[in-house]
Amino acid sequence: MSRISARLAATGAAVVLSLTAVSGAAVADTAATPAAGQAVITTDVNFLTNAALNGIVIIPLQPANPAYDQTAGLTVTLPVTGGAANIPSFYGDVQFGGGLLFLNLKTGKSVTFKQLDFSVDNGYFTAVPNGSTTPVPLLDPSGDNVITRSGLTQNLNSSSFEVDAAGAQYLDTKLGTGYFTAGQKIGKLALSYTPAH
Image (cartoon, rainbow, N blue to C red; front, side, top):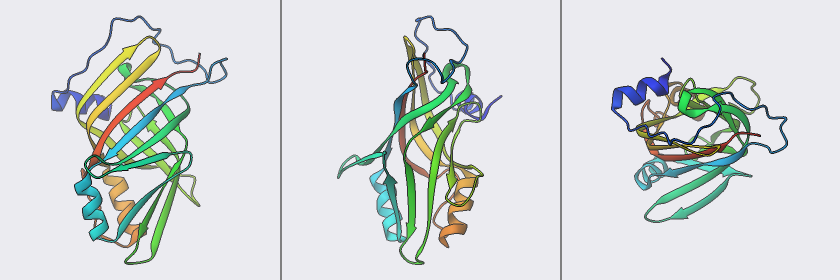
């Protein structure tokens, strides 16, 4: 059982599948209409405040689109650039444009991530640090997860978006901090994905 399907079962999360019939087979990226959609990460104000108090700043990199609200916090929209996934069946992956720059203002250390990818079967988001070719499990959809489908579009809404254990260890090591911890809630996730067709 994959991490996300196990998490859904363990947390008693609501999984809602619409009755719209869509083939279970993933569609190739070479189709006429490319994959589309976005991942919207809404970062909790408390997380941002605590991060800042620890000298940690996170900067979304283009074409990610950031927006800030004092109540809602920082919202980062990452555009879908590819992938072949069937989220309701828990397999495949979705790729995103943009990146994330993590800075530790206290130590002067930083790390930049690119090639963001949602590994549906593993249930986590990975990203590749600059200077490396190895993806790091960075963030996990958690809490209450609701999966829906409307026509070709698949949606995943997670009430909690958390730092993965491997991601926490990597960030703490690279930034020279002890701030990041496994399961640390950063906010919530809303993912919309339409496969290439």
